[in-house]
Length: 194
Image (tube, rainbow, N blue to C red; front, side):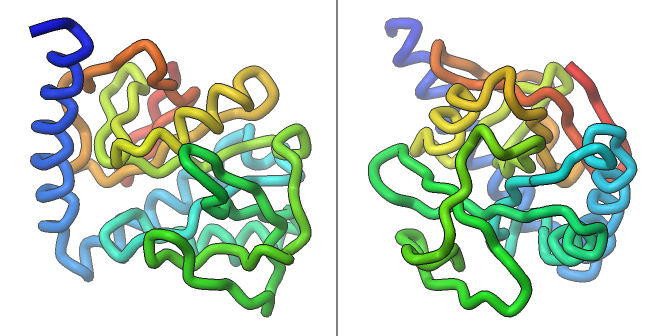
């Protein structure tokens, strides 16, 4: 088996295990864990200094970002959300209180196409979802490559912070040539820097 085929196989296997572990987190645990992640995120020096933050719209089994978004707005921080525009292509839009969201390509709430566009160069910090992470800040996503493409484009201009439940931590996440690490990983119980 070629290296790239081996990495793809290992990723597929880990994705199945990590998604199952993430789904197994009970709703009350998920709420408490999401709150702990939010508190840790808000305390990061990079977050305190940020004027514009890209946050993801969370799926039910992910770390919930609703409290984070509200807290950022309360601090006067501009919040952007991604919208799927095409294959491996996320477009960023500013998101404000009471602005309507649309149902996107994967059934997620995301900015409507006419929402004001945010440029990647305007973003100070990116909150990154993931299926699994390891303590070297390697990330495993859902497999479509949207965030790897975006993070490669924003490398060096924005701090990237992965968020996950402790159950999503792996000993080692398999990586290919195009996989992007995050700068910081935040779970309910730890903050890890690359």
